[in-house]
Image (tube, rainbow, N blue to C red):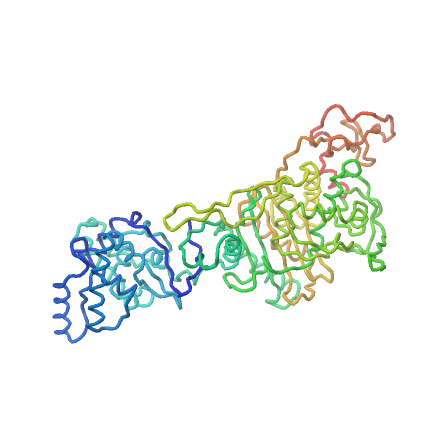
Length: 635
């Protein structure tokens, strides 16, 4: 898996521990050939090597050769200063002998390979071949080619002097010298050596910055880890954490958010650079976070809006209102007539609240699903007050929203604050047919040696009736087909079915869109940090970001799974009563079994019978006109 970051240790040193058993023979033999050919023969020091180096250094008048064994170098890195004195050299020798007495050679070599200083990244010191391999080449140590191994081994003589990014000519010369040693020792074939000597250094032009280039996602990972681990454990235990991030989707989302916000600002005459955004993309099957955007500026750590910004959610909360109603199939179906007209609601402070539709118009009696698809405020409040605020908030909690809210009627229109991640959790339960699973950024945690320490498996709990959720999701498909989300057709192929909901808050301060396909769910928020109006609705702000982003990643069409309790029934689109196949205006509509109409009309629209029992056989959605076709005609 790609290495996406680390939690930097307290002393600004970074390591990626490589067990001895995982070190390739080529790496071992190259280090020994260049640094200490007699490592497995001596006892920690080689007096003759020290004497030989001393003579050379005296002749040159400066230190040009060292006589230290690998064990001495390890002691120097771990315990001693870099001062050049006889006392330090004596201490080094004594401690090297002590290490050799208490530890075997393989343990010492493993410690050396993981401890040795290999370079600098700002204030962060790069230690060990495992981290150096990632830092210079972006790959694991076991995946390096001979010429790359030669470059890392060449750095041992002087990581700063031979830094391949700052001093490429010196680094190339040193690497080629090591390659010739590898050839002499028969570690590589002549043809390999010839090709390697001609090859460029091949280091990454830009080193992985600091701890991660995905700070917002790593922030989420750390928060989830801190529920189980102490802060010091994350910085010192060498844990290997496997996450759910998809780097390709993350990078695509980052680029899309940045470019689309610029276009929105330009096309709407807004001040450039003032809009901010947050986004999250998850898998609908496992609720795994694939990408997380906390800012319009990729890679910039700071305020993580995806996790921390709490803004009014507006109409993205409305599916909870309609789901609450559809949980009572004896009272409500998708075609139950709802009155969209002026309504006044008394609050607990003896005040009167009069909600207005966005277009300042009322639309009379409309089918329930149409009120959701067009986001009619008056109809939604009337429905919400009818089902009751307590039941509405109960539904909201069952959808996975943990926080408590004041039970004011205005909450029915989204006058409550939530984070983008909380909105994603809410829609995830809808996408999973009413089955709740907590959002996850971690798959597993392993010890440094690879032993599994903890896994984060998918946990699922049925919180809501799948049949009621199915009906709501059908209405959310209508939102995208012909309702407030119909602009998505500009970004995605018509054949890709999507369920979603726009959200716009008072004074156009916040713009939301939440939706899901067959395999991906995403939530986007667009607004300003100072909470001033943006002039953007959900469909003009967040929706274009969502559509552009999802058009660039692999998505599959939404195919809702029909629960056993759902049956498709032929009804007349004008009256909503049962009718016969082939009649003009006949359309199939999904009902929870037992909630379908019992009265029947003739093809001419006259009521001809009253059935005491429901229709004997379930219809298919394709019988007569489809539900979506009816929606198109109605709109």
